[in-house]
Length: 221
Image 1 (cartoon, rainbow, N blue to C red):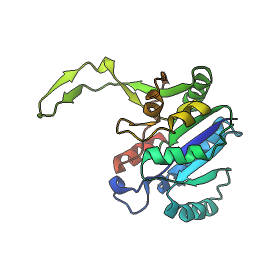
Image 2 (cartoon, rainbow, N blue to C red):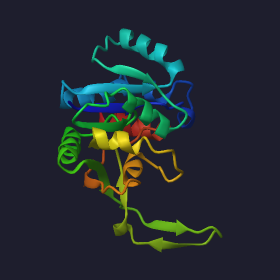
Image 3 (cartoon, helix red, strand yellow):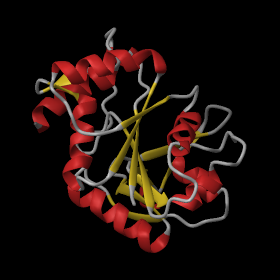
């Protein structure tokens, strides 16, 4: 049995709006609904766990009624950090569950079905998989003294979500105490000494965080 944990804890600060970014309509439908729909389209049997701040949950339920949104999903409370939110979502999965679980940003509604499929299938075979893209811009390293140097962009990749893992592996990883080096869910798993496989992401799978991103989203639709 497979799961997807969709983490949506945004406050909308960089959007310049009082509405949290995951609830902003894009093409007439809230972003978060579009994200959930994409995973439901991939697999209608996929167990969906939505991680939301407790104070946003009533608003979300009202939106679901307003938009007649009835895709089944469980709701769990968000945490103070992304690590805590992912851990809360993971706790909603039984400890004896078998299969794989993905963790995805609620404001990435344009992940392709092929990327979702590749991540889940690779994780089933290799325990951990993340979508990545090559870096196209020049990358510069800045040191502690304000100096810097250009680095080889071919040595780096842009990391996206969903990040998908064997359930038992991910539960073991999140039993660790939090560390500053945990930059995403994959880094939590890698801290156990496990290798994470990379699959090719899709360019449209952007994270909507600024008003400019919303303009891109409308264009993509």
